[in-house]
Image (tube, rainbow, N blue to C red; front, side, top):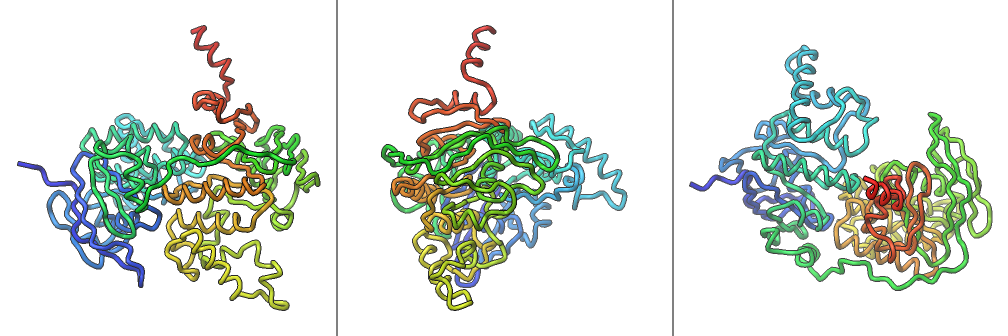
Length: 519
């Protein structure tokens, strides 16, 4: 007798006002498999999984778990049905410990000590069984993002989840952390758990899943065995057209220096030296990529260059734009924009957007006092809104509603709002951090084309990304940062991923080779 699938969705539909997020979706996920769900930003993937987890109620359709119809009215009902979900933006209390976060909402009665003791023992067991090691007494806010994600998985397993949904789980992880996550997921699958992986990264789909379903504009357009398809076919199914899976760019034609940084040092408010004498220069008409594992000073470098140094930091060194010195201290963001610097920050939600404000207001931020947006002493809101409408159309931001709050857009469309705002101002220098984090394959292609077009128009681009493939594809020169220092410079055509990986780990390749030979 054939076992019932772990999950079966029949005719699921969901609308938000005039926007049809899901339209008559059918989906079958066999038990004990890793099932990928892919699609462009705004295709309806997260909405569908939020229905399965009880965050939304469908307008129509049926959910079956192990062959039995279930009504999932809220997340507690989903948990009782054995479903756990790890969201793209983690749902943790930063100033609680790992143990407290795991227990929160699943306490054994009034006596918290008993709950914490049981959770401590269970976490030790889960760490040993699945490789989910994390300090139970550490404050979540002190943990790297990869370990915070482990806490989310531990929360679900502690609640006895047999079905685990992960929404863009590698968007905040380094390559090494992503590999470790995949080992954990395979271990969970081998124990009989069912995994649903929402991602836009086709390489990960091919690497980790047995089956993959493709959504486009709220509909399910295909479900196939992963081994029977390939990245090019999946990309075309996602977007509805052929997609270039590589960056198409000619050679750079560097001109005069645009940005020069000499001896830049930063000590943060806690006395930790984050930047240790950074020297770099970027010329007009080139893309300088900075590679490195997150947390090695790239964030602070972007913040200082963008005019937003961390509070309480002590700075020294020199920054020159077009040969003119720029001040280091104080909030210089507006002055930097007026000087010709655009900035796409690494964290779109915390630094790039005001989430409760509308799309058109966010697109206007930083540029609202330009003469063409003024009407006497007042801002011309109609002109600002019309300008935003043009950017929404050109960047295919979905839904194309300028009055929708930023928080109502998917993560990838939020990113396109920020990129549209900064790129279309035609800055002399564009600072761009993690430009395609959480962005689908079609939007990645579009954003990459816009960055290359900016370079070809004679502008300078400083690109920071934890995606080594992205750095090697886009950059004309690559600097590698480790522990606040520049470890070396390489040309993409001459560098290998292994060599760059060694530099990212703080090891000169020659020393690594010598150590291997000696061993």
